[in-house]
Length: 194
Image (tube, helix red, strand yellow):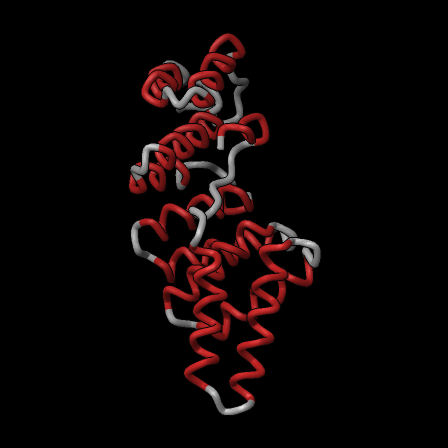
């Protein structure tokens, strides 16, 4: 039986990192396959990340879900949610983003991803709830501030009886988050890959 907690081969670690940074994903996968007797959690985390970058959402999920204690890691939960949302499984993705936030209340990428998922599900109320929570956490974040100002504008329009205007403004708030591809979280030693 393979051990998930053994050490990780240092001689292959840096070439794997270099290949991922250089977007040579297939070469990194070959090196990772040589580590089948090493720390499987690290190997599976790298493979999950590589398959997200290759846009192979099913394989990404397969490897992320093999990580022991992955359900306790807010970054892995966010990445699982990301892959699920790319497969159109927005309800399942929203659960993973919520779990990510439960493990780290200040993790803004999970809030942003959750906001988009709730919009795509059609649950605007929860989407607004998480916009406001994120604004409270990061009051100087310009993207969140813009969403907050638009939310106030939508709320005023709604209270004045201009429901179509309010819905249009609210959709602008949510669409603001669709401008960029939702955030994938890399392990700390790979932050600059993105």
